[in-house]
Length: 209
Image (cartoon, rainbow, N blue to C red; front, side):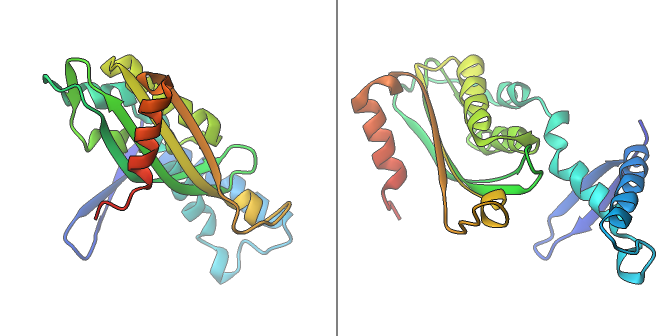
């Protein structure tokens, strides 16, 4: 594969590396040049000359989750620990692309698990959310994939996932309901019990600051 690394330095000094496959970029960009023409635009005008390439790079970044293995991400930071209380990571930012219209949906994920001999580095939970979200998705499947990955990899006594998102396919087209929020949830093990699930829901809605 022909990859090129593009480095962009942000204001806080963090280096972001976007890894592109140049052959795919060229192919996708050519298709978007044709699409611009089909839409009635002139792809050769100044403002659009580089648009096909920009869109191709953006799409490759927005779908880079296909190249990630979420289970491996978790296994890379699993530790034996005698802790059996609920671990909650809430307000994880979610950015994904609806597979029906290829428009964004975005919001927050709230995740909990009850360890059964192993814990995982807390930064890995948001990373697996991103690994699944950076694909063409539906929110329902995204919720289940995160749940199943944690359950099958960590083998805790229970997993809980709640995702709340706004969908631009609803806000910009169709019924055009700008303030609608879609909530999905998935539970395993101990979280199937009303008491445990209620504690999780209380924690993710509580203002603990």
